[in-house]
Image (tube, rainbow, N blue to C red):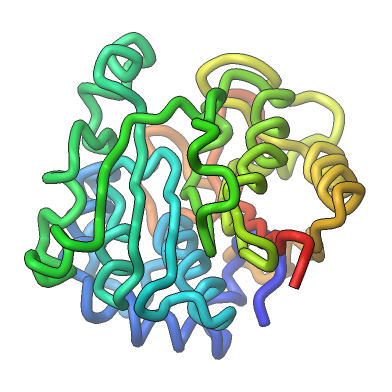
Length: 283
């Protein structure tokens, strides 16, 4: 079973990645190709293996929910900051009832997201590549505008799972990101699972980008979040081993044009993705 862990090269040869790659990436590689080549224009998917952290994030979230038995008809999922990612439509294709959320247009314009290819202005953005049968998608997926710093109370105790893919580092500060992670657990039913990915600082456990449109969580921030979640009775297991493979030492520099793209330079720090899996207290 997956636990909370960092993105690293070795994951691409594991059984869990092979399973999610077979179930998720291969059937939907048209979407993955478009997403990566749109946002990372100089990367062409010609290599046998694409070592890209966004692919890792999608497969990690998918596999965590799949192996916990949550991708089944009738399961209810809530996605935060979904943008145009494929996960909402993939989950609906498994029969899940999905509430997909993103900022309202005015807030997205102020934050600079509205003009990007990663912002969802409405539900029509979420099944653009037909990853789910349109009739099934229209029946199972709803789209709502939600600010992750102000989660509606109507979501409390409603969902079997929650997820986000590199979203809560945009809440405005390290503290607001931590508050979101704790607060979104209220949306889950007892025993529900939350799976979120975010930025992780590989360079320093002291200095980092703490405020602004993008923050980078340090080891101590992740450990602090885990401690708070455990204090509330939730379950989370951490593995913060960065990996030793040579490819893990490759750092992609702006404008982020290379394969591998597992580690990248953001401002003064090297970052990678971390995946977090949290189980809500209760059976």
